[in-house]
Length: 513
Image 1 (cartoon, one colour):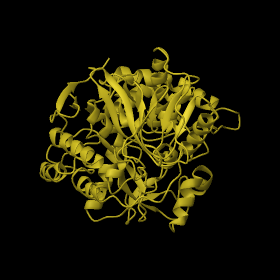
Image 2 (cartoon, rainbow, N blue to C red; image 1 turned 90 degrees about the vertical axis):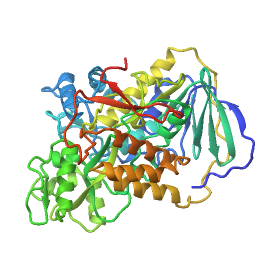
Image 3 (tube, rainbow, N blue to C red; image 1 turned 180 degrees about the horizontal axis):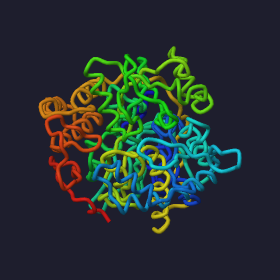
Image 4 (spheres, rainbow, N blue to C red; image 1 turned 120 degrees about the horizontal axis):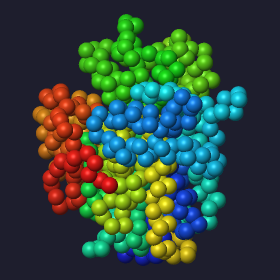
């Protein structure tokens, strides 16, 4: 939709508390945890639409089975992260996972249960135990979003601003002073000393993606321009099984399907990879090699889960059939697609960036949980745990106002937004250079092409991603350089300081307390 500006001089309003940019799981979790203290939540579209949360199929990873433990969950997470995980962060978040499930249940989320009343646990790639908690089968994200949206709408202290896009974080020498917001009623400046970025990822920068096309790294651009440090921006996870049927964005076929026994084959029936539950970067590279060799790649669920497919994965089955494929009797054509951004705004476990008053949680943040390759179903977990921890930190600070600023009246969409030509251009450049396989020559060309587009949020984030990918002269996790196929030791993070510092610097593991 178009957010029209009705006046030249912005209206200045006291927010009355923290301003949360983004109405997905991380943002609404923080708002709910902060209640009854007031806050404002900004959503660029309608609440409950346009977020990656609502599209998530896999579930929430939590060690609640009798044969499982937080320690085993930690081991699997660190192994998948290919050397870039922060061990203390991983241990803390996995330890908090069972409580996250309980908290979501308290908000009204309906998780799947066995006949005996216990929570049903699924298996996904690189997990050594069944620890994936689903809600309504393969509609976990939609169910969790429904629960927190319903709870937020019923919470008087939360002021929900729909069709309101943050365009700038305002700062002075002491930190955050406010947020400039574009609404249908005109430009508004919300005065606040506390801002949480919960804007999601960057999948919309790629031509093959499972994310909403609007997910172009707006939060990273806001943070960078405000002076915050970004970390490991080059680390993008490509999901191996996006349904390849000409739909943009590509429908996701959850890893849980492979957890129930589906395999990856080419058009001859030969296996593309022996272990289809290997870490996602491993599976995506195997698929890419097959595609580059002229093969097609399919997810074959005919034997397992076979006739159980509809019961276990009703949403995926419906999507496949709408595209002309019956997953019970036909292999599904799949392709790797940009799915999750491990990099983000560098934060500690309270969500703090290096700009006083600026916080980040969820996919936009880099906590150190995911390292170079996210373990399946750890993202919804991180959104809940870290969203709550950020709000708990705020509760330890002096209270702000008593009432959150009310949203401007008559906020409803005017029309569909036209295609953004710069975003389309950036998407083509980033996809060509920074996909599953990368090399110096293509990255160098892309960097030069993106340099003139940095005035645009998508252009800036694309430039920073390519700059970091060019700097990381090794292959690790989701970042594969064909000209540097081995990993370098010791493993190091790559930092991009805030705007004004056109450099990429290394940081050792364990540097953030």
